[in-house]
Length: 420
Ligand code: HEC
Ligand code: HEC
Ligand code: HEC
Ligand code: HEC
Image (cartoon, rainbow, N blue to C red):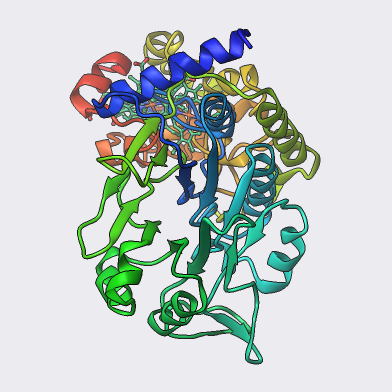
C-alpha cells in the first residue's frame, strides 16, 4: 500500500530514529506507546516556539507508527492536574482522543481521582479501553479492575497510586502489596506493565515486592516530575513518560536501549479526528460560557487604555503597534477568545471583578493597566499614580516559564519601552 500515509509513516520512523540516535529497529513484538502526565495540556497554546504536543499531533504520530508496526498504547494518568468543569471537558476530550488512538489501557492517577469517584465512573463509559487501579477500594471492593491481561497473554497491565494519596470516599491501600498480588496472580510467561502514578523514589520499594523472575518481566511506566521522558534507575526496567503531552515513549522490550522517545513537533503529522475533538472541546468551552465562571477578586476600577491617551500620548503612541495591543486578536485567530485559560493573560485584569469581561471590551489586550494596575482614580483626578514603575515580576505573571520561556526582562522591556 504505497499511499501518502505509508510514506509519512516511513518518514516518521526516520524521525524517531534520528531523535534517539539509533538505527530503526522493527521488532517482532508489538511496541508499547506510553504517555501520561498530560497535566491538562490537551493542545499547545502556541505562546512560544517550539510549539510541542497536543492530541492532534499525538494522534498523527501514533497513526504513523502504527502504519509500520503493531503497537499497544497505555497512559499512566494525570491527564489533568486540577479540578473544575474545564478540567472535566479536557479529560473527556482526552479519553475520546485516546479511543481514536487505539489505547488499550489507562491508570487513573491523582489528577483523575481528584475529580471524584462518581464522575470517574461515569467518564469511564466514554473510553473503549480499560481503566485499571490495583489499590483504590470502596468497601473492600476495587473501584477499577486491578489488572487486565491482553487476550494473547503477552501483556498484563496494572495501575497503582501512592499510599499517601487521599481519594474522597475511598481507601488507598499499600501499592507494594497490591503489586505483589497482581504479579503473583499473572502468568509467568507474559510481561507486566505497571502504570505507576507516584514518585520515582518509591520504585525500588515496588520492585522489591517482586520475585527476581517477575522483576525481569516487569516494566514501570512512571508519571513523575520532570518534563522529558527518561529511563529511571533501579533493579527493574522503568521509564518516566515525560509531561504536558509533548512526547511519546516507545518501548521495544527486545531492543537495546529498550525505549526511545518522540517529540511531538509542530511539523509532525496531524490526526484529523483528534483535531475535530479539539474543535468540539473549544465549542463546549464556549457553549458552557466558562469565560464567565472564573472566580475573581475585588479590585479598584480600571479606566481602559483609551482614557490614558489624552494625557500620556507619548506612551500610547509608543505602544500602539506592540504585540500587546493585539493580544486578544491573536486568540480570535485560533478561536480561543472564549477560553478563560487563554484569555487570562491576553487581556487586562482577568482575575479582578473590575477587569475585562465580554461586557467590557475596552479592557481587551495587554493594555496600559495590565502592567500599571487599575488606574481609573488616577485618570480622573490626576492623583499620584499607584504603580508608576512595574517590575519584572509584574511581567512574569504572564511571561511565565510555560508561555514565555525566553523571557528576559532587559531584552523584552526594550521592545515595549515608553515614557522618558
Ligand atoms: C500565563 C499567561 C498566558 C496564558 C495562560 C496564555 N498565554 Fe498566550 N502568550 C502569553 C505570553 C506572555 C506570550 C508572548 C510570549 C513571548 O513572546 O515570549 C503569548 C503569546 C501567544 C501567542 C503567540 C503570538 C504571536 O504572534 O507570536 C499565541 C498564538 C498565544 N499566546 C495563544 C494562546 C492560547 C491559545 C492560550 C490558551 C491555550 C494562551 N495563549 C494562554 C501568555 C499566556
Ligand atoms: C487627565 C490626565 C491623565 C490621565 C487621563 C492619566 N494620567 Fe497618568 N499621569 C498624569 C499626570 C499629570 C501624571 C504625573 C506626571 C509626572 O509626574 O510626570 C501622571 C503619571 C502617571 C504615571 C507615573 C509616572 C511617574 O513617573 O510617576 C503613570 C504610570 C501613569 N500616569 C499611568 C496612567 C495610566 C495607565 C492612565 C490611564 C488609565 C493614566 N495615567 C491616565 C495624568 C494623567
Ligand atoms: C497580562 C499579561 C502580560 C503582562 C503583565 C505582560 N505581558 Fe508581554 N505579552 C503578553 C502576551 C499575551 C503577549 C503576546 C501578544 C500577542 O502576540 O498576541 C506578550 C508579548 C510581549 C512581547 C512581544 C514579544 C515579541 O517578541 O514580539 C514583549 C516584548 C513583551 N510582551 C514584554 C513584556 C514586558 C517587558 C512586560 C512587563 C513590563 C510584559 N510583557 C507584561 C502578556 C503580558
Ligand atoms: C507591558 C507592561 C506595560 C504596559 C502595557 C504599559 N506600561 Fe507603562 N511602564 C511599564 C514599566 C515597566 C514602566 C517603568 C519603567 C521604569 O521603571 O523605568 C512604565 C512606565 C510608565 C510611565 C512612567 C514613565 C516615566 O518616565 O517614569 C508612564 C507614564 C507609563 N508607563 C504609562 C503607560 C501608559 C499610558 C500605558 C498604555 C498606553 C502603559 N504605560 C503601558 C510597563 C508597562
